[in-house]
Image (cartoon, rainbow, N blue to C red):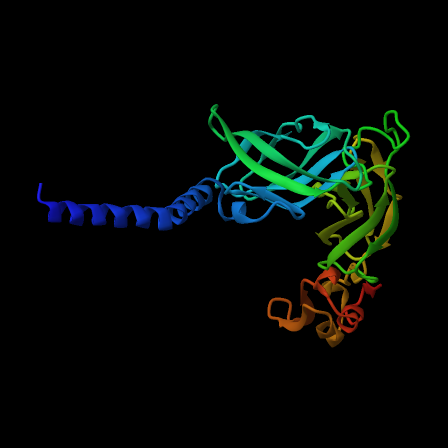
Length: 331
């Protein structure tokens, strides 16, 4: 071989080796980062050293808390499909041991509160644990798995609701106070916010408003208490007519499925009520003051008379128009 060519080849090999030694680690780090982003989504790049709940792409935690008896989180489903039999487990736990969550179904775009009961968690200590999500897509029998990580300080609260602070089964029901409506005077058609404040010896779970607008009690949508909330709220459009007495109350469950009920509250729907005087009850031109009556000449009888159907009292929305319709009362 030509010595000059050998020298040139040696220099090229040396340059290639220097390039790999200089930039090889950077290239490898880039490949690892891209792979992580593909598998777990952008949240994986966040550091778990702070209070955090990081899940793979399509899932997220809107709230979470680590208590002395377990982990509770609000799991959001954004993968584009309904999920069946969702089970969350904690793995590689630094302290204590946790049981798997109860299986739940979560619709696409919806959420569920997930609770993992744990033992031997030390209050005020920080833990970092891996999360494993097992589920099946709606319409499929194949099990899928996603992963995440949760980190935070163990707080001196109970989240699983399985035992009272002193031990033993929890049999105490939630209690309600401060029951209110957003409007002091309520008319038919008003959109009204109902609210109440709850307390429980361990933790609250779900609640529902039940309202009777004159034809029996109807339960509204069941809602979950937030992880740090003890207030029940529900918005209802009042469909009852003026003069109707509306009764309402809240029900609430705690984490041990103890049911509590608030006191029954009531209000009277305000507005125009009564039965308007019929048009044929008028015998002179004062008939025209009664909506919708008309004083007209009848060609057949050759007499004047009041014709029409008087407007219903419930259709009047102001006090003046209501009391001007004979037979109607504003309350």
